[in-house]
Image 1 (tube, helix red, strand yellow):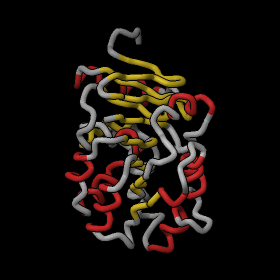
Image 2: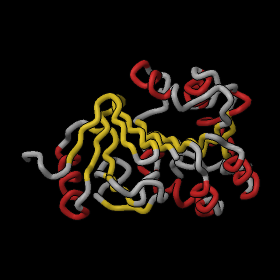
Image 3: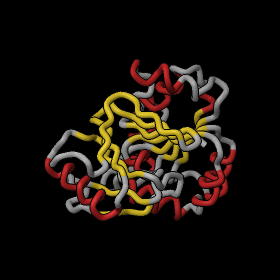
Image 4: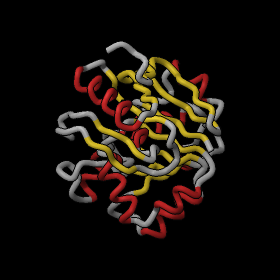
Length: 226
């Protein structure tokens, strides 16, 4: 299995392209798990389409364009729609996919919706490529933390999908005091390395256990001076 942890959906960026082209192939089928939206923003199918719909969805062109840059046909990219998919149709999209792609947003709500659709087992059976950015990156960890921000006012640990268990991840790293404090807390309480992907310029690939750091990624393991 290959896990790709990203900062954003600009996967065709020059600093990523040469590496990701080794993984993303023109024949691949992509299943986009669009479950990470905020409840305050998306209350209906109409709201969902404003973000992810093919006709002028705010994020649609960027998400799909990232894959078409690798030669993937738009027809090979399917979105799992919280409002129109059933448990069975969502499962089929995942089973038919070579790449599962988790979007950014709220990782805890994404996890809750995945459980609501009974998709945990089929997701964990996938033996191809797992990709995700921001929330879609941290959810790939067995346990992840979130530093305080506008969505999450307090530091807290959350349960994710059990793909990766050897490290923790700080996304959108800017070296703020809150982020530094969170990283040190994780190291102290969990005793594992924390990788921090710098805002929009870092990524991690875990290829059969081999960890590759792309762009600007900082590693914290407790040996750094505070």
